[in-house]
Amino acid sequence: MKTYKAVRSQIAKLERQAESLRKNELKTVIAQIRKTVSDYGLTAADLGLGNKAAKPGRKPGKGKRRGSASVGVPKYRDPATQQTWTGRGRPPAWIAAAKNRDDYLIDAAKAAAPRRKTKPAATVKATRATAKKPTAPKKKAGATKKRAKRMIRTPAVRIESGVASE
Image (cartoon, rainbow, N blue to C red; front, side, top):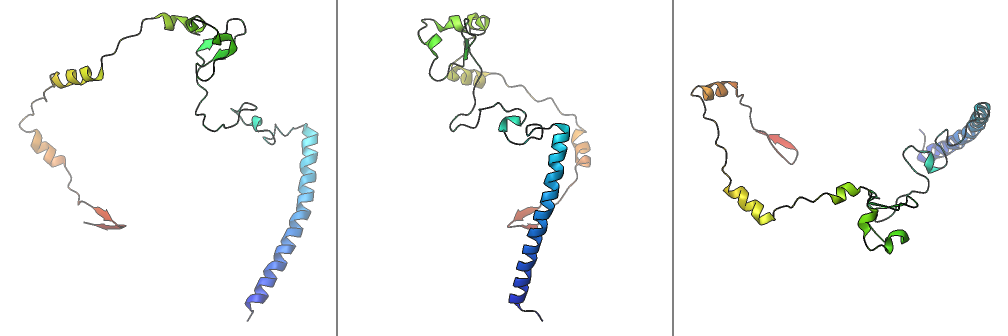
């Protein structure tokens, strides 16, 4: 019968042997990959390696920033340089000195349209309370019997602490 120490030493010996075999295999695999890459003229970006910008949907230099939920939709545009601003944060120099920012709005037609006034919440609640509620349609005499036939009675199951009981 083998002892614990003997088994542990055998495991260590096998791990060393496995690591040396892995290193030898890696040399041949890397050589094959390098040959294939050079034959086809592939780059790291083609393989999806290296720069994070290689991933679809990502822009270079745009990483996660702490505290920023989303960039937002541009609201203002400089007619001279076509630069945009969302209206959040510090205003850019081209709009900071403007007296009327409405001139820089991207969709001037929407801004010019009159806004619909909304009722205060108290008025809406009062209107809902006084509104006539629709009445339910009258039931036919034989409808409850048909419904009773369709209903299938199943025992109620209550689960407490992982055990089902009826």
